[in-house]
Length: 391
Image (cartoon, rainbow, N blue to C red):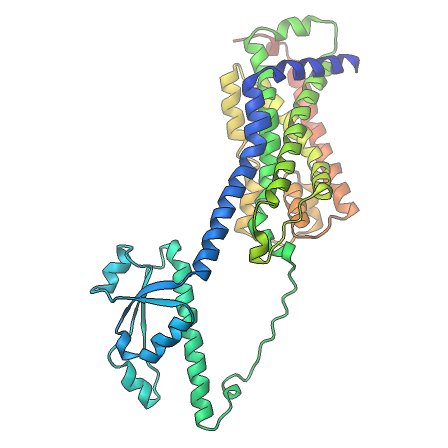
């Protein structure tokens, strides 16, 4: 065990001097996610709030045909702009997000009590126009409902006649659970941070030393190779855990910089959340460290190992992509699958739920069991005499 500790401290000390490892493992890896998150969400939230509160400026064709309608829409926030000659071209050329057209027969149909038609020109393929189109349709719907109610009252009927079923919404969501849709990507950032935190160290202590012809002198020492491997794995895990702690801390700080309260949401990040994330990620830290070392052991050079591990980096994406594309109900067996268990467990914590002791034990037990299998395979690869021979 003393030999393993010596190797661990030696690898940590040497890689702390490597600027590339420090930048990628302890700066770029853990901080790029929170930085992107803060900037992107602040821009999106500010834009949505601005679009929701600012006057809706749209061209209106035929406004003189329905002055009462235009006045009612103006009270709701519509800022009528001068009409355009070709509403279709205006929408396609992105000169306006939408165009409202009131046909000449609107007043005649309105006076007869018939449904009066209005036309809304827009391009549904342009996502940036959807908020404006949605606001306009909501305004028109409100005006239609109020006008219909007034017509019924004028005829001595109750407006409730047209609504035989009344829906009373009982939303059971909480501010924290409502934030789940936005912050569900956090588990992927945590997994990716662990991967990035140990990747360059795993490459350097195996493929890098093999390329520098320093593995052979190390293996000549009368020490069991599994002890050397244990020290190297320990150093990789140390970097991964440090990177994860920096990432979780950065996200905790970032949570206070995102105005989620303006959207009726809350982000429950704090010391308790960070501790639970760290515990759930421990099996994955060991598993990824062993897997990265195993891949690097089969590589003949630093560049080759970097290529293989860059491809392996796609594996942590799979659970996030699957759960986002096919939302499923969380069941207990998911906590027995590495990567998936971290995804569903951390997501449950973000939603304000709890991870039971049984689920946590399943996550840790199965995760460490799979990590042990990969460690055995890695130890066998380290036992090969070809590992010490550089190409």
